[in-house]
Image (cartoon, rainbow, N blue to C red; front, side):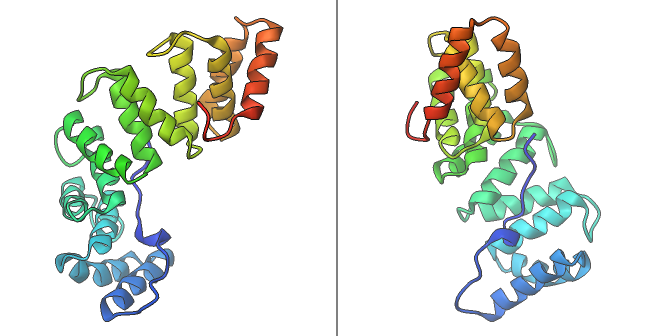
Amino acid sequence: MIPIRIIGLVLLIVCVATPAWADFWAGVDAYNLGDYETALREWRPLAEGGHAQAQVNLGWLYVNGQGVPQDYETARQLFEKAAAQGQTEAQYNLAQLYHNGQGGPRDYAKARQWYEKAALQGNAEAQVNLGTLYLNGYGVSENYQQALFWLLLAANQGNALALTKLGLMYERGNGVKQDFVHAHKWYNLGGANGEKMGDESRDDLAKRMSPAQIAEAQELARRWTPTTP
């Protein structure tokens, strides 16, 4: 499970300071110091006033129980408000809550809806999760071509899990011709980008491959760039 994320801590500094943004960044500073009560105090009025990034960050506090009791339902409500404003990270976080059944019943269809909105804005984690829903037929009809499409988009951003899942599709022949050489390549790339499952799957698959096939797969991995399938 990919963790829900807080966006405010990775935003670029706003060039033109406003009172609202000053309060927002005061909350960020407090959060980074572990002073969650002050972060809560700074962000809550902004969130209530419709500040999307403050809503996301306040939701994060409720997800983790930082400065407040853990409350997924309240977090879901806050993420929904920010997601409705087109906030990409809020859309992803909301999808995660629906996906995991946190703050309400598990709902793969709604998870797919919000993953897709974030994925269309280029969020690689949303892309890989959306591709996985299509791969497994959760909340949507199983569709290997859609799975391949979204996983490739995420892989082109260097997402290690997407690279590894592409290996799985080629190993199984899901929506593509079964091809151990390409499966090994994708697993190898996933492992190189930090996905342990990629390394493990590559090594298991190698036991069923010839030395020539392994050498070819390794060469393909070396030559791969984000613009090539």
